[in-house]
Image (cartoon, rainbow, N blue to C red; front, side):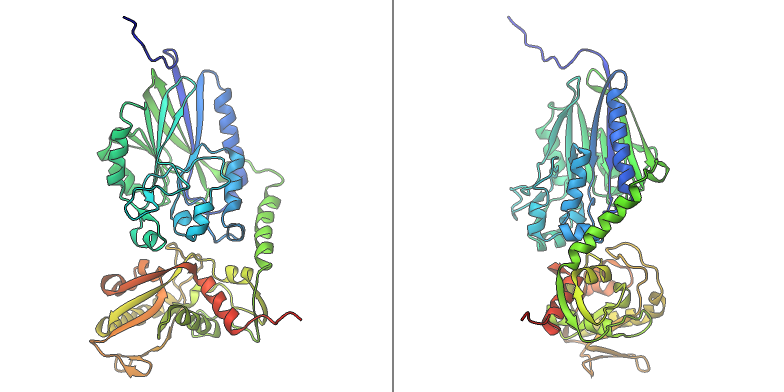
Length: 477
């Protein structure tokens, strides 16, 4: 009887090097050094004595529309940069998944020279059809034939994804099925996780079949990795400030040693042309956006972070018109600049409002609206100069709060709806931004609000529509 034996390389030791980036957020100021270090480590690994295989991964939120070139090219510039590096696989973060209109995300990776591994985002409500730009797994092979299973997952924001007609699934549902499906078909399992550090630790505790989790989303930095239940976790912080690497020593297709470390990008050598290249990326983005003219203003619309201002009033009116509501709430810190008399371009609005924030309609009973306004008034002085970070905010301070259609009288603590005291039992709908659902200052919105986030337009696009309608460009003769 002939016995067939699978032979996948001789019984020798090999090393798998994993290079990984995450949460770059279009911080192109760090990209030249990262690109060179990735190329160097690839060359070092391949040139080193012994059997070395190098794989390169990105764990999502590579793009961020706060950068003018990303905004102007709908992320195509980011994909082109990744193509030059030669990534082996990526997964997506919420900046790719939610920060792009569905039509843009659908085609974002059309020219990518790497696969997108994403097992928990679907294009149908029954969750039977994976999103068209991704694969649910990837099987890589080392020089010695070691089989490396790569899985990828993104944070499943149910409300925001489904509003964009994408349908996420919980990882606890998808991962066990995949591990069972590929049981016996892999030697090493790597998870690309845009889920956050706590979820990574949970996965390590519950699924020891995983060998490595490369993390992202919560911007955590693990300088020497973290070993949980035998699973090695790695993460490289945020914005390209660090670059991660792992080495897996493999004997007879089994890991016998694994370790992790990071490189501080600031310590990597600069090259003479770096600054010029970084400036050129920004200049190219601004130039492209300046080509799109929006409106012609008859006057300046300045912003003031301490008191009501023409710019804040204009944006409130734009938000009311867009949502069809009778009242709106915004904060002045959303506007990094005012607008000047004359032609307004897409570049002006992007510079002014770089935040990836959407309009949101909040419906509350009168008693809850009263409480919400009281929360805002209580925090008003504190928030006026509060240096807010994160939660889609790309500005500096929160700034004063502005109302349209709402007035508060502090002498008797009465809230007025268009100059009439609110009815405690009546339903009221106000417009604000989804950002208000995530900041911790106004809990009534999350606890008592019936909230509807409106996609796909960002605040800057909402203001652009309003300006184009009310201050149109002169007709060409």
